[in-house]
Length: 425
Ligand code: PLP
Image (tube, rainbow, N blue to C red; front, side, top):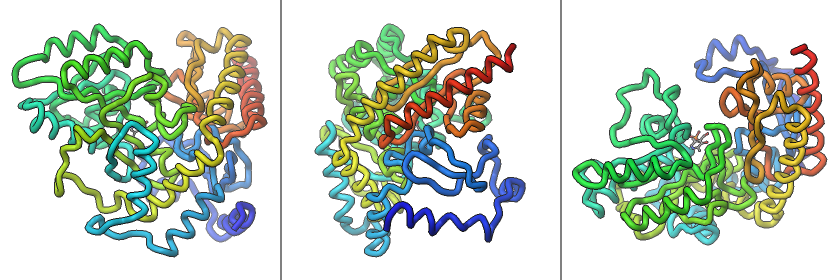
């Protein structure tokens, strides 16, 4: 089935069931501060709302729709697998789960994979694995996992505790014991905490970090910082866990964020872009720290044939369509354009930063302008963006992005900045 046919088949939905935000809000818990926009279909890097208005999608489900919307490879994998076998228990072998694990192992530093459904769940798996390794191999009675301020690792209780941002933890205490926070990209602070917890029952078992902090404001990790952490972990037997949920799967122009830092983690997690929008997560590790045994960890849906077949199609399409090179080239083009905008509007923009197709534009702290306000103005102009905190505009489009689409997004942003200026004066 072609993308056009697929869109034709779904585009009549609004006539029979008109969308009402009021009705939606009366039935769905209000855990999201939603924009007043209802999206109903997509193709490539574009989506359409229930009024038929078109948007260029630089959100991609927040760094998730690797292949954009209605990509033929995903349509085919979904259709084929749902007609063959969509779900069976992990009580049995699932051949396509093995194929996906092999692809991921062949294309990373890991030796083995465990599959689940989301980024938070993948991080939960990594935390459990690190704790079991600490108890059974390192002989640590009270293992501590160090994480960074401004990090984001998910919304379960363990992962909001791992997340170094109090706003996600407020009113959900008691939090999980066994976590301590350090400033990101600050090696002295990290070494001080490790020295402090070097003996006794409470010791550092693992360090959990993002190679680039996504939610925390699109902050790339520094090479020297991560390389020193790798050395410390090797010297002390501490596990290095990288959360690749947002930066992994080619988003940075390399398959994994850690490749930008010249190091290898012992454990890393993936989700978001792995399934291109189909829910799947993975926790991967080197064999030396794979201390899980049968019964230690499980998930009903994790690694089912449907999710694995689609994720495998996403992986193979990244390779076949050379999307790493595209992410790198389009990323450079986008950053150059954003930097030109920053130079033109120095009173609005502090900095442009990022890798490949995960980029942030930080707005001046001393002006009233917030990133959600710019995001709203861009949305009105037909460009979808997502804030990363109150001052950073985040750009995480699909990896299939074209050069024309980059130009079009930059032109829209320029119009938005000009409007903002006019409304300021
Ligand atoms: N880790 C990182 C770095 C993330 O950016 C996110 C989500 O934004 C998560 C974990 C949580 O993933 P999920 O929402 O799939 O649980």
